[in-house]
Amino acid sequence: MSGQGARLPRLESAGLDGWMVRLFERIEETNLAWITPLARRCEAAFGDALVDLVPSYTTLLVVFDPLRLSPEEARRRLLTLLGDLAPDEQVDAGEVRELTTWYDERVGPDLGRVAEHTGLSVAAVIDCHAGTLYRVFALGFAPGFAFMGLLDERLEVPRLTTPRQRVPVNSVAIAGRQTAAYPAVTPGGWNLLGRTSARLFDRDREGFSLLAVGDRVRFVPVDRQAFEAQGGDTTPMEAKR
Amino acid sequence: MTSAIHSEKNKYTVIGFRVERAGPLAQLEDAGRFGVRRLGVTQGGPADLHGWAWANRLAGNPWGTAALEITFGGLTLVAERDLTLAVAGADLGATLDGQPLPLWKRVSCREGQRLVFAAPANGLRAYLAVAGGFVAEPVLGSVACVVREGLGGFDGRGSKLAEGDRLAVGHRLTAGQPSSAGASLTEAPDEVRIDYRATASLPLLPGAQVADFSGHSLFQAFNEVWHVDDRADRMGVRLTGPRLQCRIGSMVSEGIGLGALQVPPDGQPIALLNDRQTIGGYPRLGALTPLATSRLAQCLPGQEVRLVAASSEGALKAYRRFCLTFMG
Image (cartoon, rainbow over all chains, first blue to last red; front, side):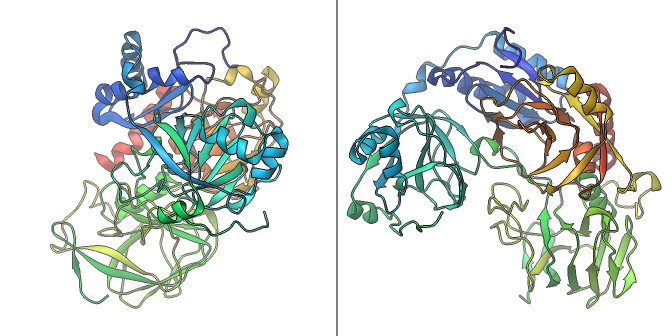
């Protein structure tokens, strides 16, 4: 790991207009209790000079307007914030987002493969995936694409050797210790278990993305009928990759 | 669409151009989409800030006005009315009714005239700004067209220009009102017209992982020539050259800034441009300055570039000087 042994948190140069605040070395669910309040305090401390914030598993990238703020001044403000940063006690108080999901081979073509790889039955794979309360660690890859964890270690399977050219929208997928749902049709190498009826990214909705960093998420298994009743798309996955 | 539509105060929206031939990639770009990267939404905006800003200024538009980014050429536009325009950035062999169109200069165009962008003669991306600006409905605060995300552009869905498109422009009611401090300037000074064919020296601010590269690799990175690969688009530009050795293979994914120079395990760096993914997990040599990123975006595959270690102070001074030219 970079700068091993150096003290955390620390600030790293991320170009003319950015500082990378590195708070942790490893992915832990408790990281969010520190990253989320830091993001909130950055908004207040930088005001109009703040351009963007990109929270992730262990870091917060702070992008500012170098015409309004020198990198040195931005650094000073961040050090002040870090000096008396306290973890957010409210991090578990919010509501749990529920993603209604139809787990089925027709929309989750890797269910069988995952079962084979893990030695579990398909039903056990579904129970295991739906039985965990996940946390959103980061958004990226595509608008509204939430990286969630941590997946039960029994379900840990590698990515596909060859990614699919087109993963259908709303596909529910796993890779490594992570899970996600695809907000749009994109290429993708994760293992598909099913499909959700949730609208993950909506340009006409306040906040746009259904999921935000720090959210807790549960996948709720339903049968085909209930899935369709919720507006779910049952169009089967094409057989080809 | 025949009638003019009221939009902003003191501004009509009218049809300025019809697209007769679309070419490989022409798209609408304002300054970019900001404040939404935490949702996984990329920045967008002009790949070459320099050319985009000069086109707007020469057309008399304020900073941030939407202009067309024309990559490679192959585009034919027909003027649907008399317009004032300017083209800056790459020389794509532009002609107006068959006559060479002067670049880096304010030009008048009559209704019915054909504006053709042929093929790259010098640089890769041309910027067409029209007085009053191109107009579209913003999506997430910006009209910047990001094809991959399906956001922005004239239709709001991230579509590049297509044959038959009719392009809306802003039309001021009070003609002749200068809209920015630089409105009186009609021609760019020689020193800002870049010869994109020359080997570019790209200032790079060293980043946090720089010490994880071998000493030999660092020497090579800043002393050998890099070639622009044909794997280059608005997400990133791959450079080929000496194989850089870094003791970090991959990292926990984290936010990536404009111009970040990431080095995957194959040792060949990728400079990340406007449409990059918001987070990634490769170690970075550092970040190209905004203007260096713009300069790289004008390079054709096969061209030579060099990386130059820069100081934050010097780079900040150059960037501020550049921006104040347009905002002062």
